[in-house]
Image 1 (cartoon, rainbow, N blue to C red):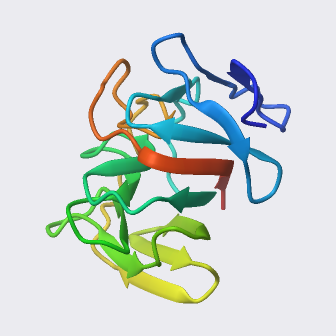
Image 2 (tube, helix red, strand yellow):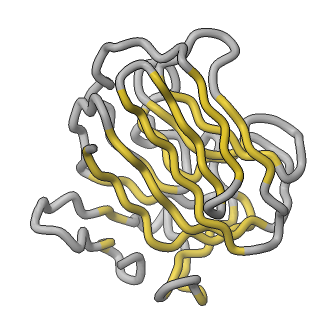
Length: 179
């Protein structure tokens, strides 16, 4: 539920997210329920600091086509994972999970439409799926667990960071699960 100042974890785990006056996305029409609309100044911080090993992150998002570094979900670029746009290529979405260079894999999804995207780590393999069809994978992931950096929605994971924020898009239904 991404509709209040506290974004509630729908499980019993208590990994709620928070919005502050300075980082305050606004409610928007979502794909599933209500979404949060990000304008490049917004961020939802969570209290998820778990050092994940094998996991899946799934998200619904809609982007307006800004071609900049943008994060949908991020938990430390170098020692965790990230999911978003990494550069200036339109319609290109990437994800990275503790991989050797080049850091991350990509798929093509048309900007301006709702998309479901999932990134999965299974051992030393990383998969990236988009809309149930687009797929990319890498076998260069280190076996080390992710660090305990805070998971952020709509921005770079570093607490208080103003970098790589989603600029002109909406996020709905973020799910993180162990596999």
